[in-house]
Length: 340
Ligand SMILES: Cc1cc2nc3c(=O)[nH]c(=O)nc-3n(C[C@H](O)[C@H](O)[C@H](O)COP(=O)(O)O)c2cc1C
Image (cartoon, rainbow, N blue to C red; front, side, top):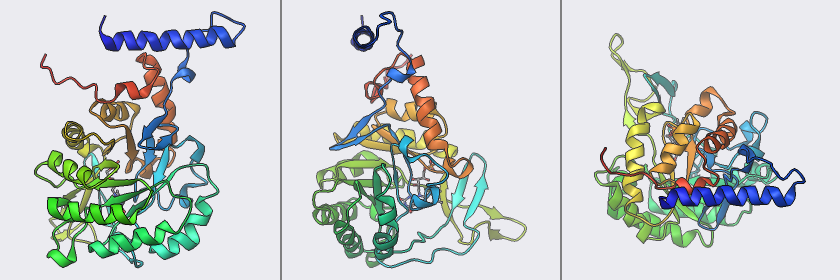
């Protein structure tokens, strides 16, 4: 018997054993309720592996009446900068075949207003909140983290390095290994004891190298990946369909590309990976776990269904049960590259 099959059988026996001990009906069959969806990212525990992604779940507060936070693994806030940012001109979103293009321009209230107005509300909910952080130079990243360090109620930081470094000619932090290393090192020092996740840009020649570099500078986890630079034009008006000339592509169109990035990174590092890009179904979630992700985030799908993340956690339980998978972590990295 293959070791995986043996493990599965052991899990099944454990469940049956528990049922015999705890229930007078000694012949209770295992059910979807017996599936353990909980995951760990470093020292953090999540009730399930589904988090809402940055920029698609506001500051969380906007979704409090729409989604059951008790069913979410957690969520990541909109990107936070040192100063408030007004953002890009409308239209900011545009549909494309199998995907969505956005140019929000990183609009946000600024870290100070987040700490004073949003965080006190978020503390009332029983859900891990991850703060997404960005800047246009290294000092800005550090300043944002320092301001958040004085506040309670955050589980971790997620560093968005898909940002132009204005002091280095506008090249993205996340496209240059030396700049990615520097900003991660500085953020790691500023972050004190809180876990630091680094969200990688998909715009790299070698994601494995970038993942190793960032891991080497003390990142506790990697989020893979951000949107893909793209554009949509109207040939009649000869203009962009967005307020900006170009934007970032997300949604189902990017899933196969990002899945490969996660797999490449998984082979290169030991720290946990959070996979995201185009997730809409429980199968999509399981695909990401198979290639090495420990948990996932859901972005664009929340636009058509604000309850998608909680629905997915229910569907995931059923999908795992149907695959005889009683501990979701057992699937992580089980992809076989053997041909045939
Ligand atoms: C409207 C919109 C705003 C976003 N804003 C942010 C952001 O502020 N910070 C960030 O790191 N990623 C941001 N993202 C990227 C998403 O978090 C995610 O990486 C990407 O959309 C891919 O996932 P998806 O296909 O499930 O949407 C944004 C995406 C969208 C669609």
